[in-house]
Image (cartoon, rainbow, N blue to C red; front, side, top):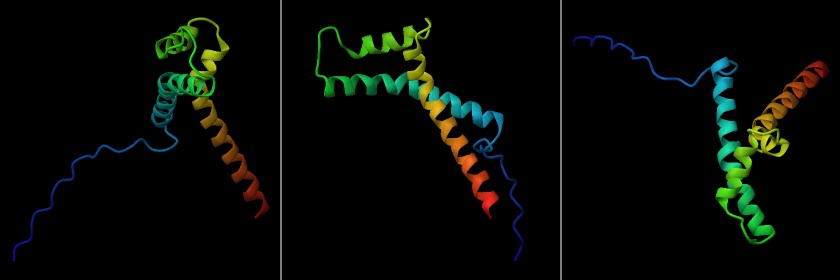
Length: 106
């Protein structure tokens, strides 16, 4: 029985390695997009659910307030957009600190 010739491996697209600059940029981009796209929707829905509807409130105005606030020094808008990524950075720093602390006890 004849051996089959070895197949060439085609380069597969892999996720960027953890810790790489590309991985960090993709992570930042994803969380910033979440903050710019999904959070205004969640803010609007929670507002109408908890506080009820009021005149002039709509999803377009919520987006406009958040995204136009990025052009002005609006801390609220910047917090909405950048907040999710900053939370991820905080959680990663806490996990790193926890691992440093637990390795010293061992």
